[in-house]
Image (cartoon, rainbow, N blue to C red; front, side, top):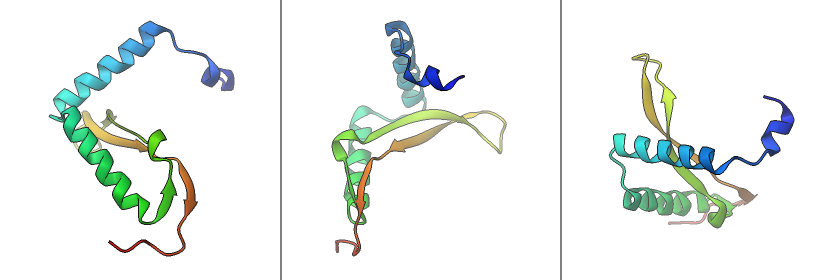
Length: 93
């Protein structure tokens, strides 16, 4: 994959395929959309104590990753959290 591949627009078929994979992985992990939203809120709450983040751009999803212990694929929680700035003093609870 070259650097220019990062800027190519995905076809609608590939986007749909990626979404279907996410749905299937979420189902295997027994994680409903309500549970994902609750986790996102909790992640935002905790991380916001230590840094200023762009909560609107936060992306949390369940994907699959290779397991070290059983040589198979396992669900993994992946979060992309844009950081605006670090806080010098954490906010108290």
